Image (cartoon, rainbow, N blue to C red):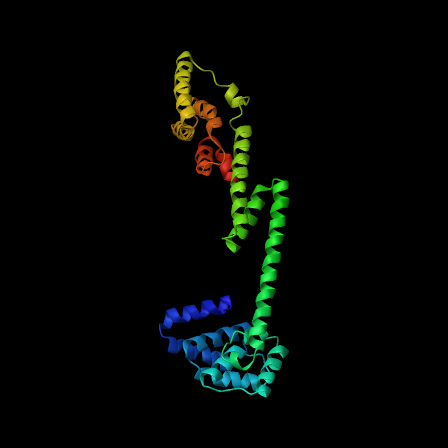
Length: 291
């Protein structure tokens, strides 16, 4: 159903809380207004699905008499539900009329006369095949774009295309596998940028740090213990880093320890994305803002 008229029908239902009243209002529109064909089809579909078949008779008759596009779906369903059996001449006229007004796709939505003419099912199969081919072509086009963006390291654009593919084909294993690889590349990119811009040991901020004897002793003690634990349990490096980085923004002891524990974090772990976000919020706020 066309989105604009769908919203209007939804608002009418909320306002009146009475489908019969809404059906009368919509039927009156069909009788008195020159509506876009998409709106007419949407209203006729609502009346058909709601069971108000009588309200469709006059609008359908007038459109057929005036040789105007109409809902062939509604026409066939009404006649089918009233046990009207078509002859070959009637069927040919209906297909010719639908073809003339480019309404074949609307016509084959109806299943009421499938037993009287095999063209209904054949056209559905052709339409299904065409739509499948179009979807496959779009899928392949988006995949090619992914490859191009990945080769040129356009991470943000690649992420948007990947999200579109995942929404369109959520069960595609190839796309799911690509997503895993993308997350790893995304994490490496964030780490690399973070290291270059904010955690570079040669940066002015690091060069300006002058450690006292007590601080040096504390650092050595912390690092020795933390590294022993992290060697045995690499995932603990993540916990140490987050704990130390969040003690106090700008704390030089915490940042130094977090920097030395950073190599322990293994790219590809389930919690790598969480680490990137948490750690960068403390160490690289400008980078997160750019994301």
